[in-house]
Image 1 (spheres, rainbow, N blue to C red):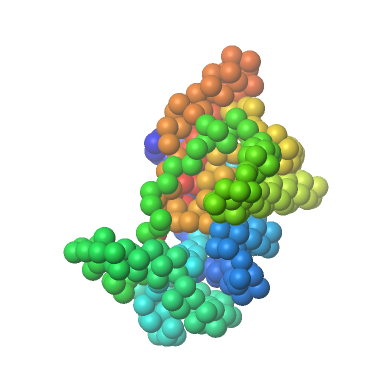
Image 2 (tube, rainbow, N blue to C red; image 1 turned 90 degrees about the vertical axis):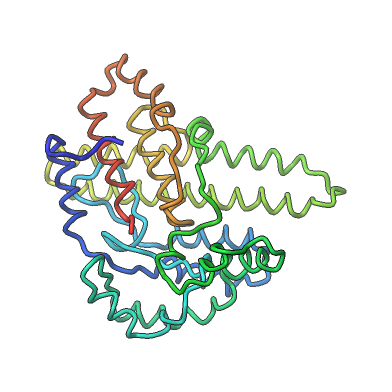
Length: 334
């Protein structure tokens, strides 16, 4: 990965200073929206319920576009925020106590702060998720029951440590960006619809398969709606932007994000933005520390080569995009 050093662009250095000068804050938006859906659709199959929760989150979470940024997509409502995934991980009882949040705010290294109103709301949410976390309360308990989780694995599963549970997910994941870049969000929906129509109702796993494709459609329709939200925001900001250069940048972002609602990316800039936007959604759903991008050099090479030959991008701008992508990938790492 290219390092953001002193020879980086002025834009990149501004974003880097923004990152390094920001304080960690806890954000409860994702957990708030997940809780609303899990209460409302408690009897739905888990895969459908999670898809609805994701869609509800992407529809309602706070979004923003930072000054100077070329790649849009924020994971939390805070400039530098951490979310608490009670649906995935079991947290020890310390999260039920106000003293825990005070300690997090006072500690010297990587202190966390949380607004009083959000803290109170989180304290109300926590009891609902007791015994419901996907990994600690469902997957790990099944592994323990079947004797598949022993030794250090068992110890880790019981550790009362927020960081351990925040850094663990269902497994290390690598999004299939080659396919996603080829078909786009709409193309994936059309593929899911096609396979859903081919299902045999006599198949004993018909409902399970049907629910899977239904969840895929819900998820990617949510991604399209999320992209549309950023398109609208960029266009609204462009209307009031006095700096002509930045105004043009915002208009390009708005048009690009609107394009993603219907078509896959075609240019290098679009491909980088599309990858980051999709990765950001995955970060919102899972945990960023175990989500890999794969071989970006291979994935992006065709877009870069084509745009260089057609003079649609110059190397210095391409480098600026990769530098910003590098920053975005490390923005919320705890």
